[in-house]
Image 1 (cartoon, rainbow, N blue to C red):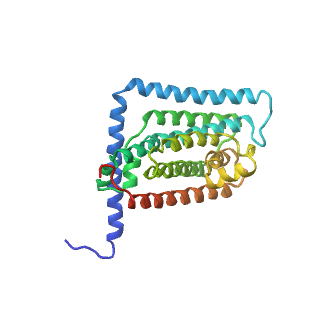
Image 2: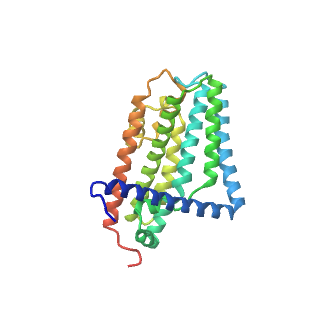
Image 3: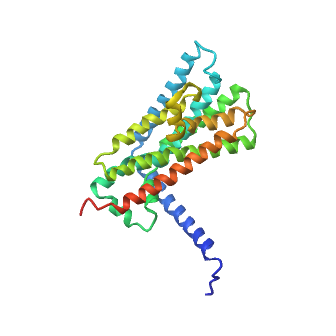
Length: 280
């Protein structure tokens, strides 16, 4: 067979991409089979998440019973924000949270060695082992709340707004993933790093609040250094406020997510260079 020396790289990249998609589909299928073996647990966690989400909506009802707006955010814009936060956080939890929360235990027990022997990228292997179907159901609930809030706002977003919204949500998920992956990687030096992971899990819930309520150093830290504030605020503004130019917030979100992703990936490889198996 004759090989064209000018085109091996694109062909190889396509083959690698298809291979990773096939591997990921197998992981998702195995996770779904595991979830269906424990149907009661699946339904229970779905119900817990739904009730927590419902509690946030009820809180807004009480709050807006006493005020007309929070800064420049009306009641239904805040509902849109909460729905966007729900959508983003549940997608993150579905694909990545369980895997990252278990990474410190893999390192501590030496089971990470098995993952490192797999013929795939090590970060991909530790980040995609499990999948949460219940979180996808709750993400759909978030999307329904977003749709209903747009109806209440009498806003009909166009294709460009919807596309930019979905791009912003994807980069928001990347922010959550990258920060938590970096925190989980600290487990190479700290025996139990789950506290850091669970701590961030609580911190990222501030994304459901309007950005106008934050001030001073807190806003700087959580908009630029740990940019969780912009994760839901940027896409919510894009979808709900067609007259506002979306580019400033969107570029900030994209730049922050790419920087954190590549920084934590570099940190991961740095940690692997200094890793000695727990079994050695």
